[in-house]
Length: 115
Length: 113
Image 1 (tube, rainbow over the protein chains, first blue to last red):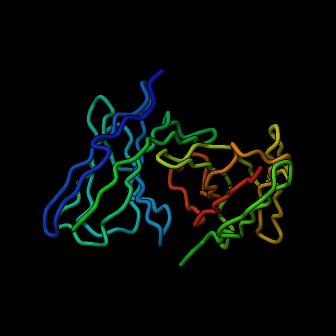
Image 2: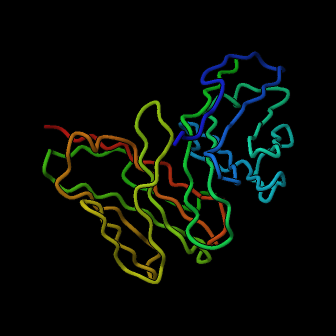
Image 3: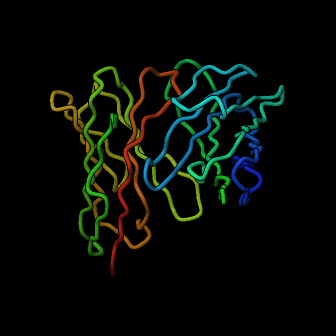
């Protein structure tokens, strides 16, 4: 079965621009989480969506936003890009149930470079 | 504030040796501790996980040891192989339904022949 698909895989933007990243979860998975990975800070939780509702949000500024569609696909948006936003953005999907282990399956990520 | 501290940052082990990666956490509310493995160009993949009601969990060559009183847990890779060369992340979360993982900063493991 297909894994988590993230597009685009690589992109370059300049400061002040905005970017939209897309994530298609594993079929049947209803929860999508987003993480930012940088060499300095490691993996940091951005937000998590389930059934089109944001359930959790990490400690990131309001420039970072996301949404989830009825087919569970998710997008995240970063507005007014800063140099420090350069990172690998990872999407993870899971079944989304409230019981049992929270097993996340990650995509390969979208590598954003801000110049 | 880093809630999960991971060490060492990098580790070189000979083929057949034991790789040991340690993590310490601060938040006693954490109740789920997974380890993820990441190869270059790939996203992290769940390797093994443990809950605080057990002190050890073994899956093949991978073992997690958990010390609740010390708030520490570690990953042991027995008979390390060159194919195990990757970056390993420990993580922690609160609640079974939470998808908000707090990750350690990772350990780059190199297994040399």
